[in-house]
Image 1: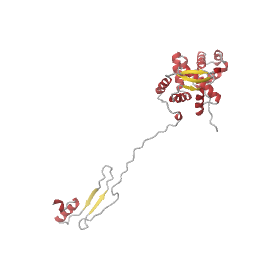
Image 2: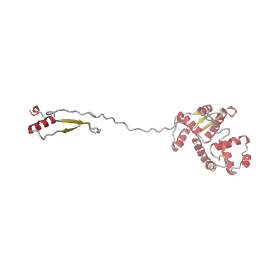
Image 3: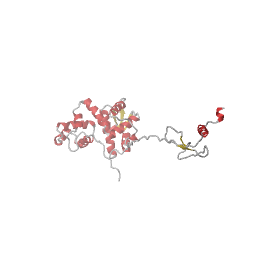
Image 4: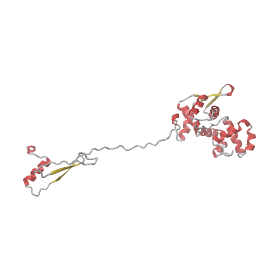
Length: 267
């Protein structure tokens, strides 16, 4: 089954959106009295849909959401700041701006915007993508991020970016704890990588090995027991000897062998 893509807000302008938002506020969301006041019958439905897409009016009515009321009751400068936040918090716009400013573009063709959204499966139809790019252009010009250039017949051609647009965008992004990233990573899954402690390999000296050596008359055994601690690699030596029947001379010779003391050492 093909992946279904939802349409982007389109077929209107930011000016129409703010105008209808104020009308809905003044009429307490009553559509019957609001629609005639808007006066633009052909764009009423799409403008209302755009307000809903940006969560400025409720899903099942035209009553303003808290965000919608905040924008509607703001002065002109505050409105621009709130629309900028609206752009940053809307994923298709945010990802587009991240890509544009990462590339340090001075101007962006409308076709580039369309292709970028299409690559990431945004928009429902080619027409929706083109008109969504035009709405985006009006919002960019409204907040002072650039100039929305129109060609012959009023058709949008490109956006020329203001010199400080990237700096302003980064300031808002940093406040939200985000950063400008590669476009291919925008939808990447976050994977937690746990760093494991390095393994310590210790080779035991003569592990499980018992070495027996006859020192005097085959009566003495020396067991070499490995030390398995990491700090000390030197084997411990346990000596088991029954000396009860030994002469003094024999005991003396025994310890000479144990400690490696021979007659030539004293010469």
